[in-house]
Length: 457
Image (cartoon, rainbow, N blue to C red; front, side, top):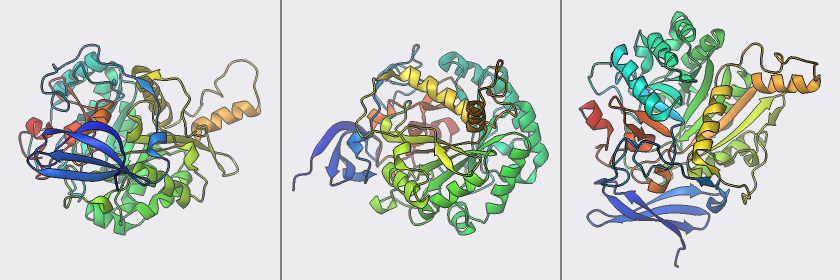
């Protein structure tokens, strides 16, 4: 049987990282990325499994290239990242790695941290890095990452440094262990201007943490949330979804998040990608795709969160992610703020730059802890009664449900990579799309991160 080829793109060989042609191939309701390396043979990986249809998951955009590219176009994507003139999206969120140290050795880690010995960049160096980032991307959102950023005692100073440059939203990517055991540290981060914590949170039972993170830690995760709530720092729960380990706990994690509103501002699901540190080469049974995640959200919440209210992004490539926004009514019912998705998008395309700007504003508004007196209560003029109450509660009791499928060497689609809006900021001023920065081949070799770290991280 001849399988229809939906479209053609480019990818890389998982064994040698050479750029090679690739095809998106349909097999029933499954979509595969198929590619052949002249030296290492043919590779095929599932990238979409089940409804909604791959062809319907679109949101048209007009590409917007960097105003001042940092690197020339020479070898082509993904070898010219910096950003180069062929990149089609601006920075929404910039990751700044403030340490390569880590206090864990997780079985799954996109950065493969804890194996490299390298000095942490000092505040002066980071200040210059923030200046370069601001010059190249403007006031984007900043996520302080690593490694485990909370191993730095001076992390509050780094938060303050970023805030002094005018970045509107500052988040820390963390396992939460120090936040759980050191409330005064959380207070110092809040005082420095930290808006949000991107908290590793993989499930509601400790067997999940033993398998993914090496030990039990659910109680510590909950204490971290409590400490952040006490000091006005918003929390996004971030779950790495691994088939056979925690995909059956999607609904339980959402139910927990609803109970923790307004301290918890969202749940962000990341179907596992095989780069950095992982146990073996993946096959299709190891994959969990965007449509499967959406289907399980609806199924495991008994329809309280419907798939029709989870939509393609307006910032990154449509096939990379989904999002929806909801709010908890006073009667305990969860209501969608996001309009229903239609299978055929008749909307006019927006510029990629505007999509990035909208995404930055959304994250800054809804992922931070709500102000005690929100916009509705601060309104001058006559009260609008129930409408004011609705606006206020929608602000304080909102919950973002989102997901992002990062690409690895087997699934990398260069069309998607060119639309990336999550960039890793390097000390020399370059901005590397997230998947390009962390991607590793079948033997663990990377394109960018090893060269920066000076070791096999």
